[in-house]
Amino acid sequence: MMTTIFFVRHAEPDLSIHDDYSRSLTLKGASDCSLIINLLRDEKIDVVLSSPFKRAVDTVLPFANHVNLQVETIEDFRERKVDSGWIDDFNAFTKKQWKDFSYKLPDGECLLEVQERNIKALKQILGQHSGKNIVVGTHGTALSTIINYYNNDYGYEDFQSIAGIFPWVVKMEFDEGTCLGIEQMDLMVKHNME
Image 1: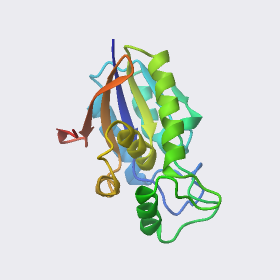
Image 2: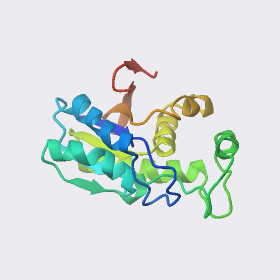
Image 3: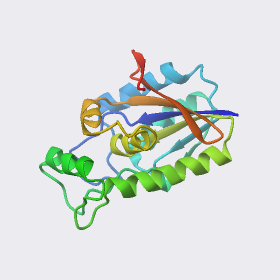
Image 4: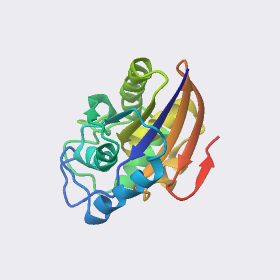
């Protein structure tokens, strides 16, 4: 039975807010949420899930309201914890993490940990919502580790190529838990990533 998941990386975040959990969207980000409605309104979505982080919830909430669904938050879909403090050279840190999936800062997560908890959450929702069309509000790193799990050619360069795309939508299709395809849908242009 085919299950389709539309992973929606949040719209443009307000980086002046350093708290990862409560970081909101910019005015442009809030406005861009209408793009999600336009893209997904004909997809017959059954369930809307999200990372608990404010920017992810706020990105999918207008769509959920449009189709009269509630947003259910899933803790394990949250973004990676980088460290307790703000990282100034984020690109150098990210490159190290993609080179070594076990690399992390003292109070942070490595990409392997992020991938494991996101895949665990994904497998749970595939079991709970088999045969459904699902939207999941997510984050760039979290989503990239999910893609990497099913396509290990997806790496640092691919992650860098989506760094400035807010929101970013990836459609994944599953049959009995097996990933059948991954398609990037950057709201105007669609192309297959395999």
